[in-house]
Amino acid sequence: MARFLIEVPHPSEERACKLAIHALLASGSHYITHADWGCNDGEHKAWLTVDVDSKDDARRIVPPAFRAATKILQLSRFSLQEAEDMLRVHAEKQAG
Image 1 (cartoon, rainbow, N blue to C red):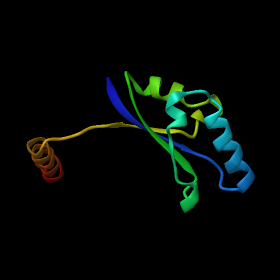
Image 2 (cartoon, helix red, strand yellow; image 1 turned 90 degrees about the vertical axis):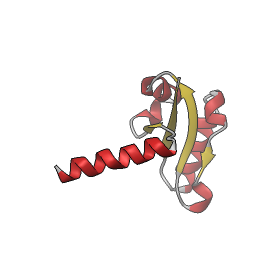
Image 3 (tube, rainbow, N blue to C red; image 1 turned 180 degrees about the vertical axis):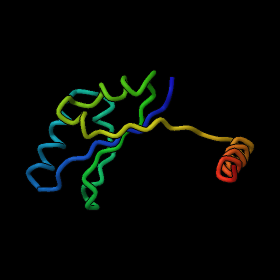
């Protein structure tokens, strides 16, 4: 399985914000009910991290009304050696 960060934006107007929060929480998805919200700090988005097989699987967790605006990123962890190798490859690409 892969790990994905799901970012679900919603409008900042109070009514729209409340409706978005209610819609996501009422979805019944275990993942959505454990989302982190940025609304109290002016960032009207919900974030959740899930372990699923694909981006499509991650997108299906989000209620249909929010899927088009949802951003999904596959997350990775690197060892120190992997990070150094990646930096070297990027430097070679920029130089050549």
